[in-house]
Image 1 (cartoon, one colour):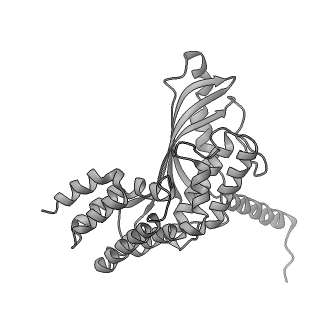
Image 2 (image 1 turned 135 degrees about the horizontal axis):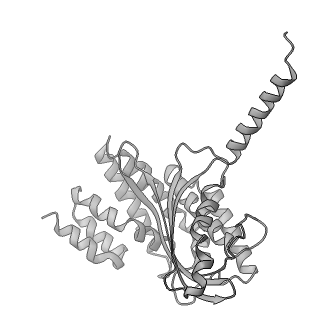
Image 3 (image 1 turned 90 degrees about the vertical axis):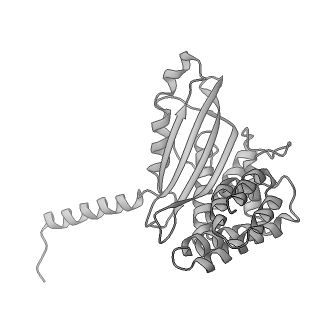
Length: 303
């Protein structure tokens, strides 16, 4: 066998390191981050000029999971910084959204839509945002929690309950945040949105049918419409009825069912314009009274 020169070996070694580095840091998310801070006093605005790019880089440059995804998960963080609450500390409201492509089609479907209005965080311009799975940080841990939630929700749409490992990571962050006394990480007393309550319900076996319904709705429903419309509609109807069965015994303050309908109500309304049984709109209104007006509007479009 021909002996390789030291230069050849060094070149191969260097190339291996480069390839390994690129694989380790392969991105999982394609996330759009938008920050508004018009409400912040002028003296503090200069301190936030890099906040948007810092958050975008933090989310998009990290390898969040071990899988090599065929397509990055698309997501959005719309951050509205409302006030200065201390030295380098701010309060904000955040919209979190994600979507996934519909198989055999050119459209996308919303997977998650959340509005979190109780976030307080510390941000120091020039200080990098860093990952630490074992320590709570009111800035990094917030994004870690929601990124794992986004990935878990996305994985659930492709395979039944497949997002569990990522939901568990989100739950670990929530537990760490509670023990650290982080604001906004306690259960809601007034029935409003709660990060802690949502992740607890997601991992509660009682609500597993809601997650299974998401898989059936997306993979068995939306992804099959182009090839088998009747079967797709049957799966979508079955998925909605699975959620309806869970809601019959769920607390009125439940989060997981509310999040499903907040995310999907418009899409569902549009889908059933072409469905054979208009009674489905009455069933939806009973399950999701918050969007009853929308369901009735689309039911009338069938006439």
